[in-house]
Length: 160
Image 1 (cartoon, rainbow, N blue to C red):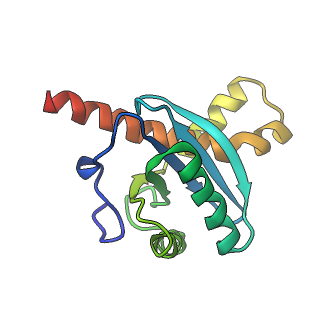
Image 2: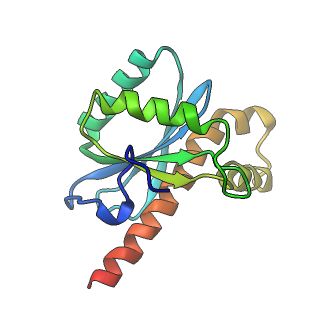
Image 3: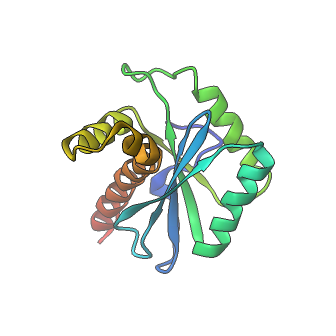
């Protein structure tokens, strides 16, 4: 999805010691995942209970500093037919507000099947409903981020 708010993954310049933060933005929580410094593996990090934007931004910016973050990959809530879903506006507003606070770029990533895929994995693992609710957002962020990392690996291979 080309949008002036977002950097295309093909245009991402990243140092070898930097990481990428994956975000699954919900109305009540933000699932957060972190890449390794080689940008190959996404690991679910935490689920942030949303408060006010200022508090959420402060928490994310602290992670940027702590983990040397080069970019955010944020899940885009598209409809199954690829059209923009109703939550796109709130995601874009969140990114616009974050862009006022940081130069770290955002990369949008199709999240259509992320929650379904993670739910399936958790059901296969016999996770209880309570356990699934506790981890689903950060695991969805990991799924979103892993998709972007896999694409980044393909792009790097094509350059060499």
